Length: 356
Image (cartoon, helix red, strand yellow):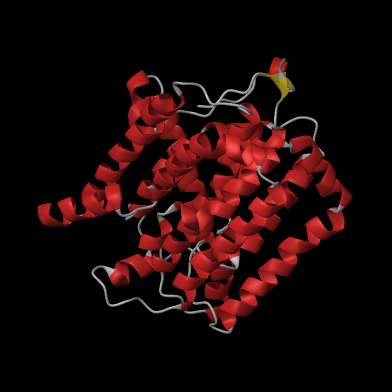
């Protein structure tokens, strides 16, 4: 029996991908300009904080699709296929980016080690996704048996404690303590566990889940605004100084944005071509856009906000163009990632879910 496609997953993936590119375009702009206007700087920083939901949203998206597509058991070749099309590109881009940012061979080997094993570059997220693939395989039958409410509450509690500890405490005087507190704590699955559990149960009960969102739609639309103001308050008061998606207050904000996107997109019968297009190239954009931003020089003749928009559009467009050109060489899938499956016009509504 065929299952209904989760149209909303394409919206989520596309918007989350675009949000990730926003954060890096902002970083490039702030790095290339001496901000003479505090207003312009604050606008860019606010945009970056608003876009931080992109990275954790991908944990939810991955598990949402996985639990919906395989409610009982994943195929035997599941990890093998994802190893080829996720881990191979991760390894290649990790080494390539290390070569790009290194000044000598010593730097290259050090950066390569950090990229591959310590979450030292933006591709670290692939390692997190693989941790959750393994958790899904190991705990799927238990998650199906356990009380969802209890599991969700416990996972949220664990996630809050973990992030709060690293957000609010000083680095311990241990080897690599500074690095662990800077970004090393990003890599273990514990820092993302709530998104995984939420994605699992939403995917298993997606129709019921959407009905609940519509039932409480006023709250769903209000929560992103409330949670964003909470983040602004915590930032301005210096109560949490971390500048990343691994802030404890991002748990509320990310979930509220995910729910709002699903609620809004559920009102569209058809998936817009632009959303499908971005979704198709989302993995390529994720892997490549930061490389193009790295080589983008400052342009003093452009206003910083205009430069940000240019950097954003340029990095996405260049990534898609590169993926499109290299797609004529099948081996490119192992280096820059495989395009994501999108449904054809005739099967936009019903199909047997395919994961790539």
